Amino acid sequence: MCLNHSNVKATNESRKSAQNHFVHDVIISGAGPVGLLLACELALAKCTVLILEKAADPRSPLKQLPFGIRGLSAPTIETLYRRGLLNQLEIHKRLKNPHQNSNPNAPRQAGHFAGIPFYYNHIDTAQWKDRLPSSTEPSLISEMEELETVLTRRATTLGVEIRRGHALTDFHQTGDGVSVQSGDQTFKGKWLVGCDGSRSIVRKAGGFDFAGTEPEFTGYSTLIDMLDPEKLSPGRNVTERGMYLQSQPGYVMIQDFDGGAFHHSEKPITLDHVQEVLRRVSNTSVTIRTLHIATTWTDRARQATTYRKGRVLLAGDSAHIHAPLGGQGLNLGLGDAMNLGWKLARTIQEKAPESLLDTYYTERHPVGAQVLDWSRAQAAIMGPEPHARALYAIIRDLMNTRDGATFFAGRVWGIYTQYHLGGEHPLVGHSVPNFEFQDGGRIGELMHDGLGIMLDFDMNASIKTLVSEYDNQIKYISGSVKDRLGVSALLIRPDGIIAWATDLNPDCSELQKAVDHWFISNLEIKH
Image 1 (tube, rainbow, N blue to C red):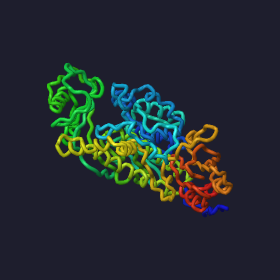
Image 2: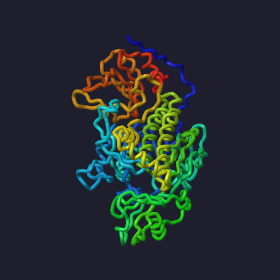
Image 3: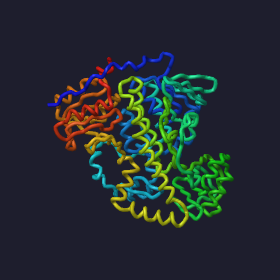
Image 4: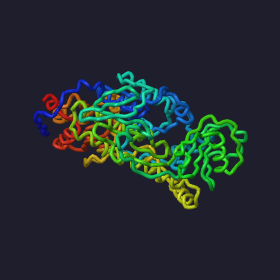
């Protein structure tokens, strides 16, 4: 028999009443996908949110095909599915795999590492049985503009205020709030989150340390018309001076190993300059007739040494930057937003311990560090020098094995993402499998409201009694599923991460510890 060991804590006299002079609970700088998803999560939890966005017009050719193509990883797909947004994305339903060979009988490419492809027929998904059953794909193709459109519509529906053409220029924080400047206007909020990209004003003005490594190359993504396109070979081509990739007609990517010099010079990207770089790297006399679009990037890899200073936090590219190889940056940033949203909301509403917000950094910083190293490793084997070419060949051979392809797919798709929460059960810290109930419903479909879930397959009365004290934060769900993976009960956080699990009769003292760590009981809130 489990007993409820929760002790009602003494009245928390330190809690302050809501500060009426703060108009918004949270101000977010940046209306990209990360800022928008964070705003959605906060608004879902009934927080008031203002987004300040520098660009007056959200539309940009760089967010559209082919520049806007992004691969969505498993955690991102699960996030969108669990909030009822995945079915609003249409691009992946009609967009062909941009890596796919034109030969319909060729193996279907599933992704790449440093330009080395891995294929679906090589991947052993049985190794991921702790992530199954699942009704969502592990990887999908999307477009930045469509994703932003879906998230903007969601945020607006939830009451988020978005002010475009309002760049954050400075801020000042006190012990209970933040005053934000945008031109000659001032906005007040209890918290400020920088989602304003790699050149984040919030990060710079907040004095965050940004540690890491400098670049090896300047990358160019271009849309061009050529007089003689036949002079360039299709696909990825490594030369003595760099690399160029021609994946679609007129879409050419170049890597010039100049130490990132041109990107950091901030010189205009002219037709003559792109032609000079392309000719030098490709060792051809190709002629560019028209330069439609061009942008540069590097493999500079840096990460904030902390994600929070007082009432100011960082997420997405504001907190970490790296080469956009394999589309890891978008997924990393959306993971930040999903992790931070519910924690910040509960901190604001005093529905969680003060220490909850600290777990944002301790959980997400290691994930970011892994992605940065993943990016550095790709850059290290993409160079034209013999040592890099030799490493490239060895990695290619490994990826052509079943175990190699499975490992690289698991990393690129985010399958191996886990938070180290200290529980003994192997599922703790992992994303909850999308368990299917006997009536065909799935657990992911019950997560649209952003609440925690106590999933009890054995309908244990003691567990139900224990979590009843948290009924406005944790939903108790019971019932039989088609494959329970040997589990009898799980505590699921609002972001879909398993906080506690058991295969046997539950130890309610351990469950109580987990619940107390992530939530405050209704009795404590009333006091």
